[in-house]
Length: 506
Image (cartoon, rainbow, N blue to C red; front, side, top):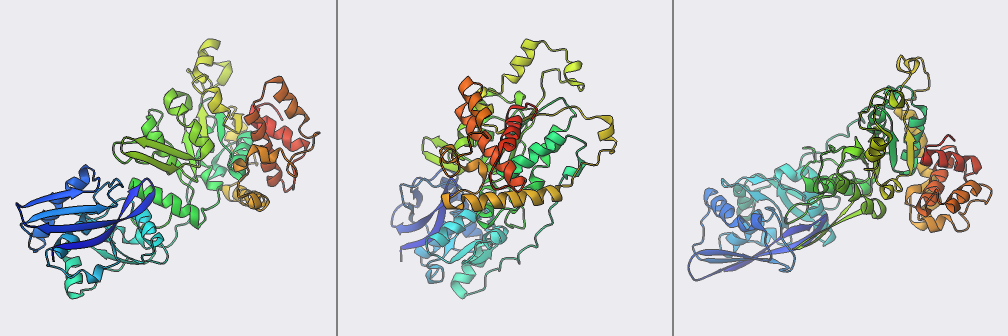
């Protein structure tokens, strides 16, 4: 036999595609040709596979070897095809009967000594195999726990090429995936640690309940970063679908924990202010990798010292904040990553950033305007909640203020508010108030009474509020009503929403 075929999976973005790895041996000068739009890492597989086959005690066929990856029009990236190539090649050479791996997806990178190394993106790869109707996969032992979280698939693991060859040839059992790791108790900073900041705490709670973007402006040391870092502690755990999405993105980025469990806590990404556009939204040559924006999908993207970020990096966030997706286009094709995040911005009011705030500031009015002008109007217009954080008073810092609720108490209200919103918007396919389209909120039966929106309509007519801002205030009002247990916002809810949006006193 001079032809053999083994199944693998290729990734384009977060989507997996079934790939047929074909091997054909023909007379001629010894050579290895790989076709099917391989990248550099895949081109180098011929050297890795040859060394691994020989060092595993198998015979290398000294013939002309053609390897083809179907569909040929789909770009192929990475080293996850190494193991499938080795098995197909040995099958074509007559060394292995391939009936035991018929209908089995084979994934893994080969070391020169024949060891099978873990690869990125196994979770979406196995998901693609199940979607294609396959229920058996062979993965590196380092990825076994990750692959096993997908229901309806039988996962077997290998640590060496020799073990897989022994299974195919003699039926020697492969390795079983480890038992599921127990769920970890939620740990992290607690809202009870924040001294004072009643308005800031209310803003964080409203943002969590409705999925709204948040901006915190104030002097250093006031608690902006503490508030932002505690936002994930009051967000509910991810459901199964969201957890699979988030875990798949982290798998592609290669940052999953070793135990491979599903990520149930909303992710939190806080890139440094020197971050580039590519590190924020994703990029790289060949297959564009997800950036901090996509790694924060279904969680929080926190930009501390937001005014210090480059203007290009900040402006690159505008479109994904509206669409919930990042589209990255390269010469060899486009990639799409989900990016539905809660954006949290924190900034000082001026370059000098004196702790005392405006009273000790030495910056000129022009310098202050230029500094905050780095946060453009179109970007800020997409931020639902914009509050000023005042310096902490001594009484608050010394713990005499009894208003500091723990995260667990606030999280319970957030869960109840999100449940009310999900029930209300279920018929139109939304779960959070921040996701509801503006036109829907302006039509019956969801349009608010004219008396409740009188001030809001006046601001729109005077030009002090954009149409986008109008819709975002209405969404905030619905969230406030949900938190307070009301079925519909009233005039007071709209007034508080205006205060949270504009920074004015409610």
